[in-house]
Every structure is written in C-alpha cells, then in structure tokens.
Image 1 (cartoon, rainbow over the protein chains, first blue to last red):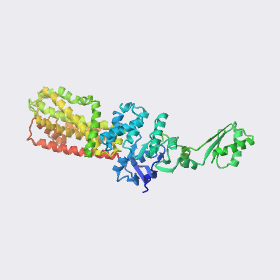
Image 2 (image 1 turned 45 degrees about the horizontal axis):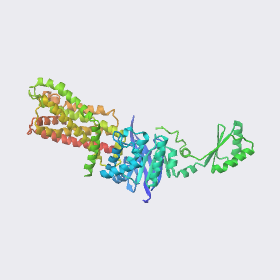
Image 3 (image 1 turned 120 degrees about the vertical axis):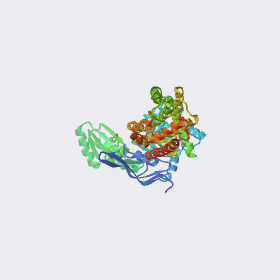
Image 4 (image 1 turned 60 degrees about the vertical axis):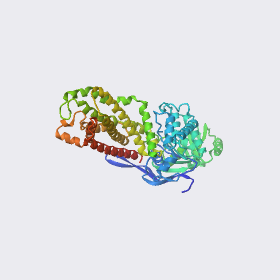
Length: 327
Length: 253
C-alpha cells in the first residue's frame, strides 16, 4: 500500500436486513465503493440523504462491520486492526454525542481518558481545545444549555481530543446558522493546515466546493464520480450564459440565430436563453456584439460557473437539492 | 489493568449522573417503603401459618422485600441507556479503544451500588418495626442483592440495546419482573402455595435467592439454601451480563 493513502477501500459493501411484512429484505446501503484519500487533504464525501454516507463513515470508524470488500485506514486493516484504528482515528458523528447533563469540560476530560491518557494529560488536552475553539465562556456549564453552534464545537473537540492524524466528520454543519458554519469551516481549514487529513461527509454542495481538495459523489450506495471540484465542474460542459430578452418574439429570433452558431448547447425558458460554453467570460462579449448587430435587444445578461449541483444533475438526472428528504 | 481503569472511569461517569439527581435514589425506594408501612402489618396477623412463624413475620418479610427492590429497582435502568444511545454518547464511547465490557460493567456496578444504598436504608427503616437481624448474615446478603441487581440491570440494558427506543422496553421488563417476583414468595411464603405453584417456583432462580437471604437474616449459616442461592444467582448474573455485552457489541456490528 502506498504510504500517502490514509484511507483506501476496495469494493467496500454493507447490507442491512430490514424486517418487513412478508419477510426479511436485504437492503444494500453501500454497494461496493473504492476510495483513496490522500494524506493531508480534505476529502469530501457528497451525496443526498440516504445515499450511504453515514454507513460508510461508520464502517471507517469501526462502528459497523463491512459486509464485504476491504479497507485500510492509516494503514491498518479495517476488520483485523480495529483497536489501532480506534486509537488513531478521530470521529464526529451526525448526532455528536456530547453528554448533555455533564459540562463540556467533563465531557472532554473523560473522552481524553478513554483514549488512555492520564488525568493530567487529559486535562491539558481539554484545555487546549477549549482555547482553540473559544469555548471558555460556556465550557463549565452543562452541555444541555449550549446553542447549536456551541454544541457542535464541543462535538468536534470530543471527536479529536486525542489529536488524531485522520478525522472523520459526518455532516458537521447541518442545522447550523451561517455564522457558526463559517466558524467551523475556518476551523476545518486550520486543521488541514496542521496536517490533519479530513474525511468530510456532507450533503451541502457549497461546503464541499469551498473546503474540499477531492470530492467523491455518492448516490444510492455507489460512487458516481470522483475528482477535484474544478475537474468535476469542467466535466459538466463549461460555464452557463443566460440572456434575457424583452419579448417572446425576440427570444425566439435570438434562439434561432444563436442555435446557428452554437447548435449543441442551448435551452430556452421564459424569455431566457441558456447557453453552455467553455470560457464563458470570453465568449460573452462576442455573443453580445453578434446579437446587437442583428438588432436584437438584450435586456439582461448573466454568466455563471457550473456548480456541483450541475455535476450531480449530469450524473444522476436529479438535482441534489430536490433530493432533500427523499428518505 | 486497562479494563479495571476503564471500568472505574465509566463507573464514576455514571455515578456522577446519579448523584446529580440524588432524589431519584429515594423515589425508587417508595414502593418497598409502602409495602413496609401498609402491607407488613397485615402479615403480623397471619403469623403462625406455614412459612411464617408467629412473631417472626418481619424477619421473613424484609429480606424478601429487598429482593423485590433488587428486581424492580434495577429492572428499569435501561431507560437511561436509551437516552445515551439517542444522544450518541454510546457511539462516542464505542469509537474509542475503550473495552466494551468496561462500558457495561461501569453501569451495572453503579446500579448495584445504588441498590445497596437502598437496601441498607430500607433495613434501617424496618428496625423500629421490630426487625432483628444477624449483622454478618445481613452483610453477606448484600452481596446477593448486588448480584440480583447486576442480573436485572444486564437484562434491562440488553433489551435497551436491542430496541433502542423506550416504547417496548417497559412492557418487556414488566413481563419478566412480575412473574419472577410472584414466584419468589416475596409477598406471602410459598409454603402456602399449592404444589403446582411450588413446583413452578422451583424453576424461578430468584426463589432460591429469597430462601437464601431469609436464612442469612436469621443467621442460619448452615442452611444449604444459602450456597444454592449464591451459586444460582452468580451464574445468572454472569450469564446475563455476557448477554448484555453481546447486545452492546452487536450494536456496533
């Protein structure tokens, strides 16, 4: 195995048995996935609810046994060397897992002790994270009194109290207000700067786009595409330019004329003409001059880069946004 | 060594939770105290029937009552575990290298300690009601109550880990605790029962525990029922602890 791969999976699978009327049914939650996560990167695991993201993360953190396939995490075998993986991999689950009746500090110290640290080191590590995530104003109160953002900070601190080399984060920002989200993103970037590899599970495209070096998009238990955010987006077919016209007639004429010069990538909807092209910002002035020369009045013009949603749309035929609450 | 240290950590964590609301230690003593105040006086009038020597009804009733406390007081501890499962606390423990057995042992030991506090308090309350007890026998009986507590708590945690939700837990536990307590001769001695009921009680392990603690309370150390009671309940406690542990490991599998 190449030293630089922190996570390497081959055909990793997980089935669940669900009891339904008329007998048991096998549900394939993860249908054989191949992942390689490089040392020091933020690896985004992007997909809609129920795609198999959390199941994969639970397998990687030894909480679930794989049904099949193999995986190495930090060079340790996922099935045979669970003890070493547990010691060295940090993990923050979707629910977090802070003990609400206890104070944040009690939570942190106990968690550090569970990793085998003695009490003085445990207290030292806890203090470090209190400082790092600016939690001193609330850390001695019971966690039940925390705001969403405060609790999330505690959750993340709990997940990495032992200073792991690899941190698994399961939807760390879901349900947070924009400020808390931005704060957490900042902290995740800082961790990367310190050399921690981060496996970030998310259903937010903007999050994956902003933070991640590599993204794997998972849908229905399968990885549909992997690449850098840039690569994924350029696969979609370039930038989008939208012209707005004052009337239906002009729109139709414009469409006819534009189709002649760019027949392969044009769509019309509500007096808007959508055009997909490489180098949108360079093509735009030419097109504008062309329409002007034909005496077609352009009311508005907009150019946008493709988003990861467009990537998801291209590979699955569905929008990631529409998929919310599918399961 | 590691196991011992981790069990201690988990025990302290759970004990802190209990001591945060110590009033519940007393709340769950309410039922046996009611039996002591409102039911035991009825027995005094019955003294002289088989299994209930006259003038000795308190010595027969109180050790059984403590078995009842051990059965019912420990049976519902699983609810606290469901809360910890739902909030992700158990998962957070499971991603660490901590021994799975330490997670469960730290809990059942806490439950046993709480139970023993309750048993001692109930016994003290019973003294003004005429209880005279052999001190050595009483101290030895505490071990048996603790083992019953471990047994019931393990059952409770085992089902909590299987169900992961509250709704089916209470009916399941009631279905277990009610028959085993009725078939233990706690309220009235089984000597009064028809033969078929006595035979049925013989397959109930807790009836041996009741016989054993009654012998211990009066200091009848030669009684073979004491050894029987300890042997049966120890085996049961170990067996059900291992079953609970299996459920915990299964949760992460």
